[in-house]
Length: 253
Image 1 (cartoon, one colour):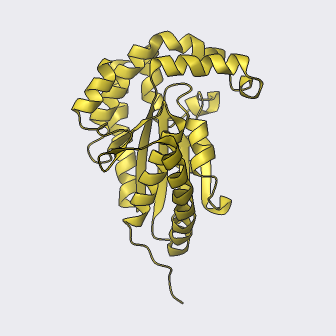
Image 2: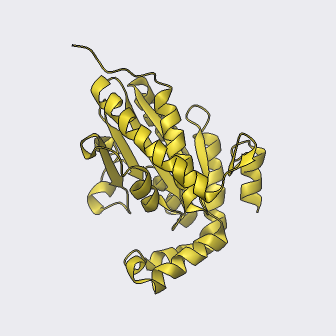
């Protein structure tokens, strides 16, 4: 697979499913994920109490890559008062009457808060590029606007973690089929998922460009997501490691 090979060559997707040279199995990863979620609860409290930093988590990926599942499994231990989730769908008529970042700005996290974007402003590059609804010139400027937007968040004390959930085309096909045949998943089926499937290669090429153009300062984190148990472990561990690096302490009175 050309796309995956390129990620490996870029050094983004090295040692997947391994830890310190040893393969991580499902049982071990699930036990570790429970511990990581307990750590996330404590770290979230520190973030909220310290009121110095905020955390923006961006989840991108193809249809059925597991964005909803990641939110449900990784963040379930957190205090609802300190975390918000925003799912970005196709722009409404009102949103299209403004600049493309207009709908994003109100949802950036305040200090002490964690904000999760299920899809994000990157959809405003992906979809117009694949479906050719905007000129190349306008799309090129959007890369610059997004970099400026994210750099502004950094300067204001917001940590930005950008996760790309990478599933194989075969796994995506199986998950879309499940949505048609399994009762508790049928509600998630969207005919648009099937319509977009033939555009797999086109979307991958746009993602490659996004990783290159919107990556150096705030690098993309590529998550091997065919195995849901590993996806949850990987994302949780990355967030825990990031928050621990802040060396936060509870403020004294």
